[in-house]
Length: 235
Ligand SMILES: Cc1ncc(C[n+]2csc(CCO)c2C)c(N)n1
Image 1 (tube, rainbow, N blue to C red):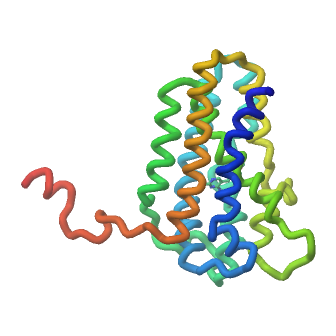
Image 2: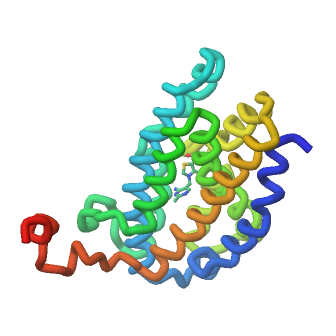
């Protein structure tokens, strides 16, 4: 089995969990709470800005000019997925991301981003393996959840985007490119195990990302407490 297939087959149970997450089932039934939509869009805007930086770092770390060349066209602008966010917000009568309050990353978003940059500090292949679940999981659940019949659910556009049905708005080939880079490399057994662990951890973060925004785990001590870090340090 080629390495990318090994990664995907191990992650299959996690994809099943993600597909059953209430965030996604509520998308398919058009019952996703406005608060969950707002929390998701806010967190995702922030997440994607950091993801774009990590992807750029991968292109800079590329072990050969050929690989760098393959990655270059994929360095999407952080806001290239903003159409997905616009569609979600429109369903609750908010037209612009700018209308949302400023975002503080919730602990899950922050942990996911820290995970990406921790793998940047390891090596190029660890980094692209950490970047892969984000690019791979969405098309995986989208192809399974997009309804075959016509629907008036406005949230289905969001799924169709990730099912590559609007290639002019968002190209969905990043996962394929990153898997191909991995498949062209030969890894020792122990390196394969390390990369598999990174890949699965990334898929787990994808589940947590939905869970944190669905339940709005956004109530941070830093937002609610009147004591500042500075005061604690100087006490
Ligand atoms: C937490 C989170 N994970 C994955 C995506 C989806 N996504 C991000 S980058 C990319 C590759 C093509 O743009 C895809 C599919 C998201 N928006 N937010």
